[in-house]
Image (cartoon, rainbow, N blue to C red; front, side):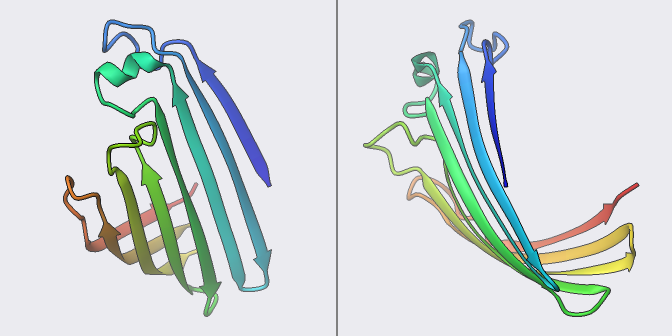
Amino acid sequence: LAATVQHQTDVAQDDFNANIDANLFEAHAIYQAGPFQLRALYAMWDLNDAINAASPGADEQEGFYIEPSYMLTEKLGIFARYSEWDNQAGSSTVDSEFQQRDIGINYWLTPTVVFKADYQNQSAPSTESELDGLNLGVGWSF
């Protein structure tokens, strides 16, 4: 279990010609029992109202995910993830919440190299495009 609080006095770094104070709050948990693992995370940005001039409701942004996974063998694992996020959560009049479901597989070539593939299915607000698709990746830890 862990939590984070961060304060920034100029999160936009003068991109909007205004000092935008912001606070980030985050909490996450990881549970593992044998080959099963469960991860969850929630995060929220709270920005001062100066950001509303650029994007209504963007003074509050929040999201979370929950991700169960299972190691089938020493080299092969599967996972699923459910996510929700809203980059304009400060507006009660704008439909801006995204939802996404992912299902994927990981194959460890070596203990430090992993090949990843997942399919994502996204539900977007009516004003946005949904991004469904296949993602491929390679991970390397050193």
